Image 1: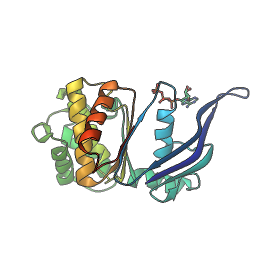
Image 2 (image 1 turned 60 degrees about the vertical axis):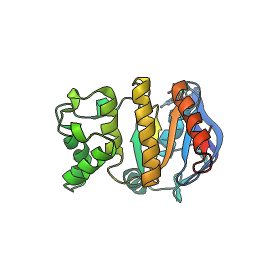
Image 3 (image 1 turned 180 degrees about the vertical axis):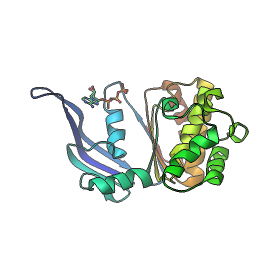
Length: 223
Ligand SMILES: Nc1ncnc2c1ncn2[C@@H]1O[C@H](COP(=O)(O)OP(=O)(O)OP(=O)(O)O)[C@@H](O)[C@H]1O
Protein backbone atom coordinates (compact mmCIF):
# COMPACT_ATOMS: atom_id res chain seq x y z
CA UNK A 1 0.00 0.00 0.00
CA UNK A 2 2.81 2.40 0.94
CA UNK A 3 6.41 2.54 -0.21
CA UNK A 4 8.78 5.25 0.98
CA UNK A 5 12.35 5.23 -0.23
CA UNK A 6 14.92 7.69 1.02
CA UNK A 7 12.10 10.12 1.79
CA UNK A 8 13.21 13.62 2.74
CA UNK A 9 11.31 16.64 3.96
CA UNK A 10 13.08 19.92 4.53
CA UNK A 11 11.10 22.91 5.81
CA UNK A 12 12.56 26.20 4.72
CA UNK A 13 12.12 28.69 7.55
CA UNK A 14 13.86 31.65 5.89
CA UNK A 15 16.85 32.32 3.63
CA UNK A 16 19.30 30.99 6.20
CA UNK A 17 17.38 28.46 8.19
CA UNK A 18 15.91 25.09 7.28
CA UNK A 19 14.65 22.11 9.30
CA UNK A 20 15.34 18.56 8.15
CA UNK A 21 12.15 16.83 9.37
CA UNK A 22 12.56 13.54 7.44
CA UNK A 23 16.05 12.42 6.69
CA UNK A 24 15.93 9.58 4.18
CA UNK A 25 13.08 7.40 5.49
CA UNK A 26 12.50 3.89 4.10
CA UNK A 27 9.13 2.32 4.91
CA UNK A 28 6.87 -0.40 3.49
CA UNK A 29 3.26 -0.91 4.58
CA UNK A 30 1.30 -3.82 3.12
CA UNK A 31 -2.37 -3.59 2.16
CA UNK A 32 -4.57 -4.47 5.14
CA UNK A 33 -1.80 -3.89 7.66
CA UNK A 34 -1.95 -1.77 10.81
CA UNK A 35 1.31 0.13 11.15
CA UNK A 36 2.16 1.80 14.42
CA UNK A 37 4.84 4.49 14.37
CA UNK A 38 6.31 5.53 17.68
CA UNK A 39 8.69 8.40 18.15
CA UNK A 40 9.75 11.33 20.29
CA UNK A 41 8.29 14.75 19.90
CA UNK A 42 9.81 16.44 16.86
CA UNK A 43 10.99 13.19 15.25
CA UNK A 44 8.85 13.79 12.15
CA UNK A 45 5.75 11.63 12.76
CA UNK A 46 3.19 14.28 11.79
CA UNK A 47 5.36 15.32 8.86
CA UNK A 48 5.27 11.73 7.59
CA UNK A 49 1.47 11.54 7.94
CA UNK A 50 1.10 14.83 6.10
CA UNK A 51 3.21 13.41 3.24
CA UNK A 52 1.23 10.15 3.20
CA UNK A 53 -2.05 12.05 3.17
CA UNK A 54 -1.02 14.38 0.35
CA UNK A 55 -1.33 17.45 2.62
CA UNK A 56 2.25 18.42 1.84
CA UNK A 57 4.89 17.30 -0.68
CA UNK A 58 8.15 15.58 0.17
CA UNK A 59 11.34 17.43 -0.79
CA UNK A 60 12.98 14.34 -2.32
CA UNK A 61 12.87 10.55 -2.41
CA UNK A 62 10.15 8.19 -3.51
CA UNK A 63 6.64 7.90 -2.12
CA UNK A 64 3.95 5.72 -3.63
CA UNK A 65 0.58 5.05 -2.02
CA UNK A 66 -1.90 2.65 -3.55
CA UNK A 67 0.07 2.75 -6.80
CA UNK A 68 0.18 6.56 -6.99
CA UNK A 69 3.46 8.43 -7.09
CA UNK A 70 2.77 11.29 -4.68
CA UNK A 71 5.79 13.32 -5.76
CA UNK A 72 4.54 13.48 -9.30
CA UNK A 73 0.74 13.75 -8.97
CA UNK A 74 -0.72 16.95 -10.41
CA UNK A 75 -2.49 19.30 -7.96
CA UNK A 76 -5.83 18.12 -9.35
CA UNK A 77 -4.98 14.45 -8.90
CA UNK A 78 -3.65 15.15 -5.42
CA UNK A 79 -7.02 16.64 -4.42
CA UNK A 80 -8.73 13.54 -5.85
CA UNK A 81 -6.31 11.33 -3.93
CA UNK A 82 -7.07 13.14 -0.67
CA UNK A 83 -10.81 12.82 -1.21
CA UNK A 84 -10.90 9.24 -2.41
CA UNK A 85 -8.00 7.32 -0.92
CA UNK A 86 -7.29 8.66 2.57
CA UNK A 87 -9.16 9.39 5.77
CA UNK A 88 -7.63 11.46 8.58
CA UNK A 89 -8.05 11.30 12.33
CA UNK A 90 -6.32 13.88 14.50
CA UNK A 91 -5.72 14.13 18.22
CA UNK A 92 -8.43 16.67 18.79
CA UNK A 93 -11.06 16.37 16.13
CA UNK A 94 -13.74 18.19 18.08
CA UNK A 95 -12.59 21.53 16.67
CA UNK A 96 -13.37 20.26 13.15
CA UNK A 97 -16.90 19.23 14.12
CA UNK A 98 -19.92 21.50 14.34
CA UNK A 99 -21.19 21.66 17.94
CA UNK A 100 -24.78 22.70 17.22
CA UNK A 101 -25.41 19.92 14.68
CA UNK A 102 -26.27 16.36 15.71
CA UNK A 103 -23.80 13.47 15.31
CA UNK A 104 -25.61 12.21 12.21
CA UNK A 105 -25.72 15.70 10.65
CA UNK A 106 -21.98 16.10 11.23
CA UNK A 107 -21.25 12.81 9.48
CA UNK A 108 -23.62 13.65 6.64
CA UNK A 109 -22.12 17.09 6.01
CA UNK A 110 -18.99 16.13 4.00
CA UNK A 111 -21.14 13.88 1.83
CA UNK A 112 -23.64 16.70 1.20
CA UNK A 113 -20.79 18.90 0.01
CA UNK A 114 -20.09 16.29 -2.64
CA UNK A 115 -23.67 16.72 -3.80
CA UNK A 116 -24.94 13.45 -2.39
CA UNK A 117 -27.59 13.19 0.26
CA UNK A 118 -26.48 10.32 2.42
CA UNK A 119 -28.40 10.21 5.68
CA UNK A 120 -28.64 6.41 5.57
CA UNK A 121 -24.91 6.04 5.04
CA UNK A 122 -24.19 8.52 7.84
CA UNK A 123 -26.34 6.38 10.16
CA UNK A 124 -24.55 3.19 9.09
CA UNK A 125 -21.16 4.77 9.77
CA UNK A 126 -22.26 5.87 13.23
CA UNK A 127 -23.53 2.34 13.92
CA UNK A 128 -20.17 1.01 12.86
CA UNK A 129 -18.38 3.19 15.42
CA UNK A 130 -20.87 2.17 18.11
CA UNK A 131 -22.88 5.38 18.38
CA UNK A 132 -26.36 3.98 17.65
CA UNK A 133 -27.81 5.68 20.72
CA UNK A 134 -26.16 9.06 20.20
CA UNK A 135 -26.96 9.71 16.51
CA UNK A 136 -29.36 12.53 17.17
CA UNK A 137 -27.48 14.07 20.08
CA UNK A 138 -25.92 17.46 19.48
CA UNK A 139 -22.15 17.25 19.21
CA UNK A 140 -21.53 19.42 22.25
CA UNK A 141 -23.57 16.99 24.35
CA UNK A 142 -21.26 14.06 23.51
CA UNK A 143 -18.21 13.04 25.53
CA UNK A 144 -14.69 13.59 24.14
CA UNK A 145 -14.39 9.91 23.22
CA UNK A 146 -17.78 9.91 21.48
CA UNK A 147 -16.80 13.03 19.54
CA UNK A 148 -13.64 11.23 18.50
CA UNK A 149 -15.76 8.34 17.24
CA UNK A 150 -17.91 10.78 15.23
CA UNK A 151 -14.67 12.03 13.66
CA UNK A 152 -13.71 8.43 12.82
CA UNK A 153 -17.13 7.91 11.19
CA UNK A 154 -16.54 11.06 9.10
CA UNK A 155 -13.10 9.84 8.07
CA UNK A 156 -14.81 6.72 6.66
CA UNK A 157 -17.41 8.65 4.67
CA UNK A 158 -15.63 8.31 1.33
CA UNK A 159 -14.58 4.67 1.76
CA UNK A 160 -10.87 5.40 2.22
CA UNK A 161 -8.38 2.61 1.58
CA UNK A 162 -5.91 4.19 3.99
CA UNK A 163 -6.64 5.67 7.41
CA UNK A 164 -4.05 8.02 8.91
CA UNK A 165 -4.31 8.65 12.64
CA UNK A 166 -2.13 11.24 14.39
CA UNK A 167 -2.15 10.69 18.17
CA UNK A 168 -5.79 9.52 17.98
CA UNK A 169 -5.96 8.78 21.69
CA UNK A 170 -3.97 11.79 22.84
CA UNK A 171 -6.87 13.65 24.39
CA UNK A 172 -8.94 10.82 25.91
CA UNK A 173 -8.63 8.63 29.03
CA UNK A 174 -7.23 5.08 28.96
CA UNK A 175 -10.64 3.38 28.82
CA UNK A 176 -11.73 5.50 25.86
CA UNK A 177 -8.34 5.00 24.21
CA UNK A 178 -8.92 1.24 24.36
CA UNK A 179 -12.38 1.63 22.80
CA UNK A 180 -10.89 3.68 19.98
CA UNK A 181 -8.10 1.18 19.41
CA UNK A 182 -10.55 -1.72 19.33
CA UNK A 183 -12.53 0.26 16.80
CA UNK A 184 -9.47 0.64 14.58
CA UNK A 185 -8.92 -3.09 14.74
CA UNK A 186 -12.57 -3.73 13.80
CA UNK A 187 -12.33 -1.33 10.83
CA UNK A 188 -9.13 -3.00 9.72
CA UNK A 189 -10.71 -6.44 9.89
CA UNK A 190 -14.15 -5.69 8.51
CA UNK A 191 -13.32 -3.10 5.86
CA UNK A 192 -9.75 -4.21 5.19
CA UNK A 193 -8.55 -0.62 5.57
CA UNK A 194 -4.81 -0.10 5.93
CA UNK A 195 -4.15 2.00 9.02
CA UNK A 196 -1.14 4.06 10.04
CA UNK A 197 -1.19 5.33 13.62
CA UNK A 198 1.47 7.61 15.06
CA UNK A 199 1.85 8.12 18.76
CA UNK A 200 4.09 8.56 21.75
CA UNK A 201 1.36 7.20 24.07
CA UNK A 202 2.77 4.28 26.05
CA UNK A 203 -0.71 2.87 26.83
CA UNK A 204 -1.32 2.56 23.13
CA UNK A 205 1.99 0.82 22.67
CA UNK A 206 1.09 -1.72 25.40
CA UNK A 207 -2.17 -2.44 23.61
CA UNK A 208 -0.34 -3.01 20.33
CA UNK A 209 1.90 -5.52 22.04
CA UNK A 210 -1.23 -7.38 23.28
CA UNK A 211 -2.61 -7.50 19.74
CA UNK A 212 0.68 -8.69 18.44
CA UNK A 213 0.75 -11.61 20.87
CA UNK A 214 -2.82 -12.67 20.07
CA UNK A 215 -2.81 -12.16 16.35
CA UNK A 216 0.67 -12.87 15.20
CA UNK A 217 -0.50 -15.18 12.44
CA UNK A 218 -3.28 -12.94 11.14
CA UNK A 219 -2.01 -9.39 11.17
CA UNK A 220 1.43 -8.06 10.95
CA UNK A 221 1.68 -5.42 13.67
CA UNK A 222 4.93 -3.53 13.45
CA UNK A 223 6.82 -1.79 16.21
N1 LIG B 1 5.43 23.60 8.75
C1 LIG B 1 6.63 23.51 9.35
N2 LIG B 1 7.55 24.47 9.16
C2 LIG B 1 8.76 24.38 9.73
N3 LIG B 1 9.16 23.37 10.52
C3 LIG B 1 8.28 22.38 10.74
C4 LIG B 1 6.97 22.41 10.17
N4 LIG B 1 6.30 21.28 10.57
C5 LIG B 1 7.18 20.60 11.35
N5 LIG B 1 8.35 21.25 11.45
C6 LIG B 1 9.55 20.79 12.18
O1 LIG B 1 9.85 19.48 11.70
C7 LIG B 1 10.25 18.63 12.77
C8 LIG B 1 9.30 17.43 12.85
O2 LIG B 1 8.01 17.89 13.28
P1 LIG B 1 6.76 16.92 13.42
O3 LIG B 1 5.59 17.77 13.80
O4 LIG B 1 6.63 16.12 12.19
O5 LIG B 1 7.21 15.98 14.62
P2 LIG B 1 6.35 14.96 15.49
O6 LIG B 1 7.17 13.74 15.65
O7 LIG B 1 5.00 14.79 14.90
O8 LIG B 1 6.24 15.74 16.86
P3 LIG B 1 5.07 15.70 18.00
O9 LIG B 1 5.07 14.30 18.56
O10 LIG B 1 5.54 16.72 18.98
O11 LIG B 1 3.79 16.10 17.32
C9 LIG B 1 10.24 19.48 14.02
O12 LIG B 1 11.55 19.93 14.25
C10 LIG B 1 9.32 20.64 13.66
O13 LIG B 1 9.68 21.81 14.35
